[in-house]
Length: 97
Picture 1 (tube, rainbow, N blue to C red):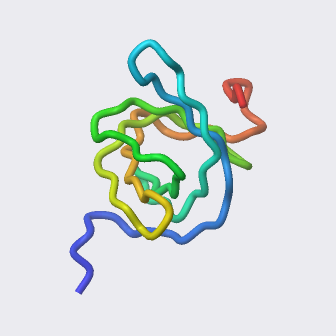
Picture 2: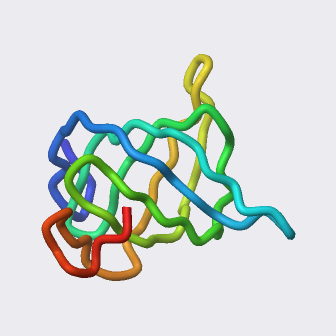
């Protein structure tokens, strides 16, 4: 039984995630694991604190969201990011990359 509110769609993509960590801006390479209507799962080499606002520029889209949770998975960290607004495609005038 799937108790999730929204269907998850498995994807395979890479990107860059940025967020503020005190006075520093952190920018790391991430992998995108799955997406739903209002969230994205990412794999990161570094822990992301729940509540951190992040920006992700992926292979095909870009979005801003809030880290909802993060857990260790082997050598990586898996985080759930709740979208703050709809993602926009690379072809959009809003894409920063």
